[in-house]
Length: 331
Image (tube, rainbow, N blue to C red; front, side, top):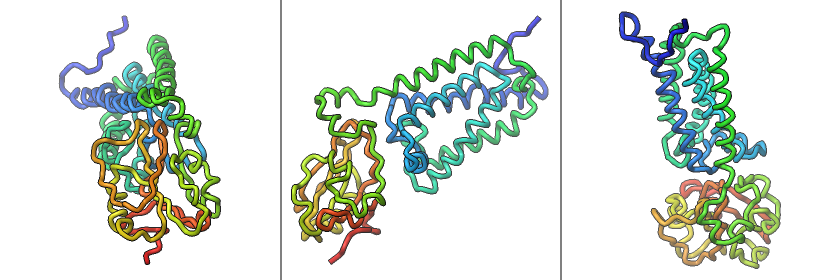
């Protein structure tokens, strides 16, 4: 007669290691992974994907919204497998955590402020990296050889069926709940709020491709509201900034307060839900002309971004700081 399946083995000599391993493989680690998936569903924005994924896959032209939805689906599937199929819990956890490590190492190398593992919730990538490494080592060493997690020659049919149904539901949830893209507060502003942005719902700039191009012919120029008509006249700067960006404020204080180095247009970059109302920095560039990009879009511009124009043609475009003001001619 088949014995009932339990998550934790009964207490007894030698069973502490097994109990800890099962608790990790079938409760704690799935809860860790599931929390990340749920928070990403609630956020629903590819702008909070790991910086390494945005840099690597975005450069290849991969649809970042698909990356978000696919990652959520995989995480939910793995959570279900680890809970519902004990024989696959250890292997599924090892593969999932192992796949996270290159991305987290890339985030740390890029100096990302958040790992992107938990949607809009900001957690430093080194914290997540250390946690995932600890979990991975636990699965590799502590859970090794534990009978309750041993992979059988054939999996029970009931477990496979339930896990399969969970997987189908996970895909439907991941690709369904994150596909709406536009927050309700943006939709209420009418179709103009979104029609002036990219159809994909996000924009990932390739600054190198801007060089030598007429700025007014770039895609991003078509979406800027309030763009001056005289951009083709002489040398000018375009400064992309965020209203709550401390680095942007610092750059303006150093170089764009009193006498401007060149005529400058400051382009405000919103979040997907709109411009921030908390943590807004003082706007000190009194001589700057003002323009803005529309909300309802994930703008992957790591502000401040400075663009130098000569007769309307892009001579230089780069993400800058006050300490490293690339593109800026200091007179």
